[in-house]
Image (tube, rainbow, N blue to C red; front, side, top):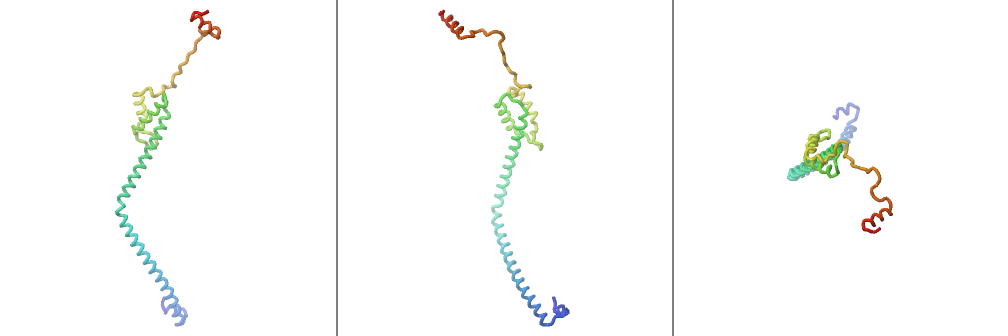
Length: 176
């Protein structure tokens, strides 16, 4: 803003000086605010630089610990997924007993078969086939376990009443 521009608007010299005075007061206030904010910014930058220098000494240790914690967490998640996959895959098999199933699952988890993207274990069928060869008694035969039951036909061979039983005992001991 120039004096000539204000005079071209039809302002008198006195009015032009008032406009410049008001503008100067406003500008001085804004300059003071800018100076204060600049000083605060510079102080904050200095504090941040000092803090970053102090943290640089700690940073490598914390990065290593964070990386190790992430690896452990990833390993635990992978083990859980593999465990669920093993349980799921073994649920389709028929075992002769719960202890046979527990032994199979324990051996399967120790084998540490790789987990595929679809949640199945790579090489599971081959492992089951080899396990059936090494421990065939762990698996129930197709169609389930055979049921053994028998019944006698005809009349019972022993006494049927208490009197007959007592008479048989007396006869054994020679009492009639």
